[in-house]
Length: 368
Image (tube, rainbow, N blue to C red):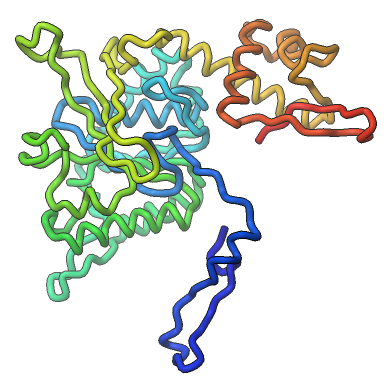
C-alpha cells in the first residue's frame, strides 16, 4: 500500500517546508492486514535487501546463481520454494566464461538447459569499474555513479523479481567501517527495491572479526543493522571433527527481522551445484517437483485464457487428470500434477474461487 493512500496530517502552526507525511494509525483498522511476503520463505524477505556473507571460496556466488536460476524457473533453493520471476545478476566477481560453466552445471542439476534461462539477465562487470557509489570526499556523503544509473535503468526495463549484486567490495566505493556510509549505501539498494518492486541480494565477504565470532559480519555493525535479513554461508567440520569436509556447507540466518533466527540448512556440493544435505528429497526429485509445478501453472494459465476451468476436487474437470492428458504435460503424470497442485496451494501460488450461478456453488482453480 502506498504511503500517500493513508492521507496526511499537518500541524496547524507548521510551515509547509516543515510538514512531514503522516497518517493516523486508526485508519489501518479499515484495511486488511497485508500478509508477509517472502522471496525465499523465512530466509529472504521480499522487496528489501538481504546480505549473504561467506568466506572466500565457500561458494556464495554459486549459491546466489542457483537462487537466480531457481527464481526464473519457479523452483527450489536450498530445499525451499522460491518466488518466481525475472532476475538481474550484477556480476563483478566472475567473468562470462566462469558464469557459463557454472550455469551449465546448475541447469544440468535441475534437468533444464541454459536455453531455458530467458528470464535471467546478466550484467558482466568483472574487470570493469563496477562502483555503484563513491564518497564525495569533502562531505563524506556517498554519491551514486553512472554504473548505478545503468543498474537502475536495467531494473526498470527488466522488471525483475530479484536482483543480485556480487560482491559488495566491488561496488561500494566508500569506507566500509563508516556507519553513516554503510547505512546510506544499503538505503540506496533498498530504494531500488521500493522503486522497482523487487528484492535485493548483495554478497559480501566477512571481516576477520566476523569470521572469528562465527557471525560472518562485514566491517561496521551498520551493515548488519541496516539490512532486514542476513545469511551466512560457511564450511562445516566433518563428523570426526578432525578437519573440514571440503564439500559440506551450512547456510544460517544470522539476522532475521521478519522470521525466526538461527535456522540452518546443510548443503553439499556435488557436480557443480549445492544440494540440501540429509533431506528427504534428492536434488533430482526437487527438480522434478519444480518442473511439475511450472507446467501445472503454464497449463492453468492457458486454460484460464481460454475460459476453461479446472477443479481441485475429483470430478470430470479435476485438474491433475485433465492436465496429464494435455499435450503440454511434457511427461508429467496425474500423480505428479496432484502433488504439484498440493504444493502450489500450500505455497499460496494458486487458490480456489467461485464461478457461475451462486446456486451451483461451482469452484475453480485460479492463479493467486
